[in-house]
Image (cartoon, rainbow, N blue to C red; front, side, top):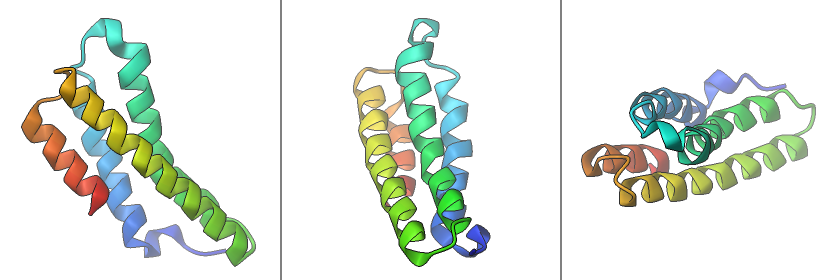
Amino acid sequence: MVDHTNYKVWEKSHRLVLDTYKPTRRFPSEERFDPVSQTNRAVLSVPANIVEGCGRKTQKELARFLHVSSGSAHESEHLLTVSNQLGFLEVGRSKILLHKLMK
């Protein structure tokens, strides 16, 4: 097992979760179960998969969960972009979150 807090990618993705949940609270109430929920779940999945992989016994399992985490990061990128294009997320906030996600 590996301590997930040793990974900068976990630390950055954890901060991204906190930074993403705040603006999604302001999305239109009728969108709560579509872009809001999906965006929050995708962003949360990035650090969650890192933590789960670190709790596994082999490097192969860790690598598999890091791969899943990467996929969640790409999903998050798409959802943040769509939220911006639909006008739910202001351009400045969207650029900041996307920069943090892909950095």
